[in-house]
Length: 211
Image (tube, rainbow, N blue to C red; front, top):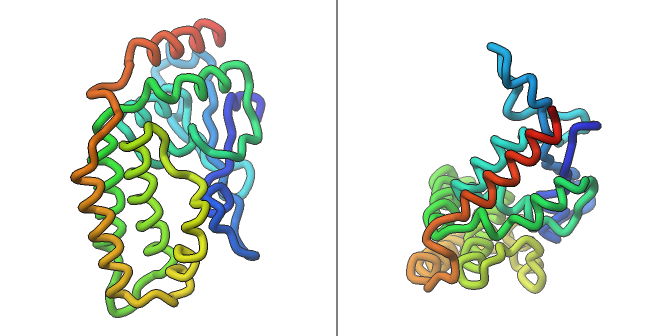
């Protein structure tokens, strides 16, 4: 759509975990006209479509979630597959380091823990188990290097074996526990707090440009 400043592919195709029948999941950032915020009815903060498996956030909502170290949102900024990028989208990608903080320790671990708790040991959803492991790996790389792990590289075969149910549940839980322990104990290169000033400056520029 014309108001998109950024659209990327996420999910299995971005991670390098796609198989023949994998969907193409897209996430984007759009900008609502500034004057719409002057009305009693405010613009939407997110929307689905128009393509299948496409979801987008209004730029302010996206920035707030990224400042809160939301794993899904942060990983969008490191997707290797960028389909739409305007000058403001490029500025947003250039700001990705400004969103980072040590809160990522908690959010990546928390999201993975929530997925783990939803898994039934008697009948695990193996695809969900695979993505839970991948999320812990991504968080661990983020706190150690300042960049999340999006492409899984050499971990692909083992992760896909989890997806196919070829890895015993006990081995999956041991892998999860080991990664969780590593993440909790990892030293962090991330700053204590994000750079809200740089993000706010960007958002003000966006609003002025869309008057």
